[in-house]
Image 1: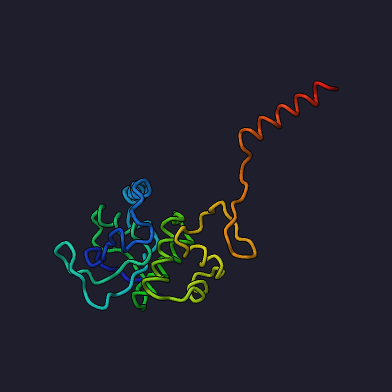
Image 2 (image 1 turned 30 degrees about the vertical axis):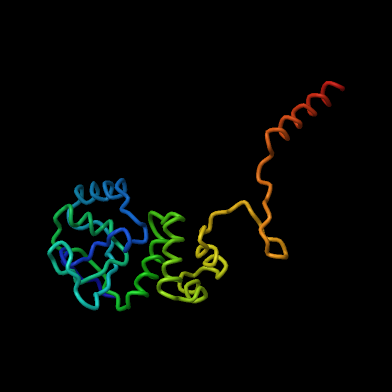
Length: 194
């Protein structure tokens, strides 16, 4: 796991579909840029990248490396005109890189929101055809957690529960206005009768 300096111009900055977070967090990017401007040298940890199987041409330049972890740091290096950035180059294929990108973004810093996390899990399971059990093991999660994330509605609670016959049943989450009014009136009545 040697750290080497890589030219920022050779990094493939992901578009929305290629990025686990979906989009760059602009307040986080501004905070990182302030830190980079205020310090001498490069103040951040090394990014994690993989060498692409074949270079991809984007914005008129050949990109040689895919960013697995460190998109915000790479954009700061680009904005502050750092010619190179410290990086750890991992040997892995595209599918392993997608799993690693999700894993690393789940465990550090600014966490991935549920919507993007669930969409990324569905992408890996459906489009990339990875078994849920294998993905759960790689992410250090339970199979049940990955199954919840892989559902079309994601891991959000639906307000329904499944009975033994597996048919969804609505769950009572909050009392209705009429129930609240009845409870208040009965409380007044019982207090007044004392």
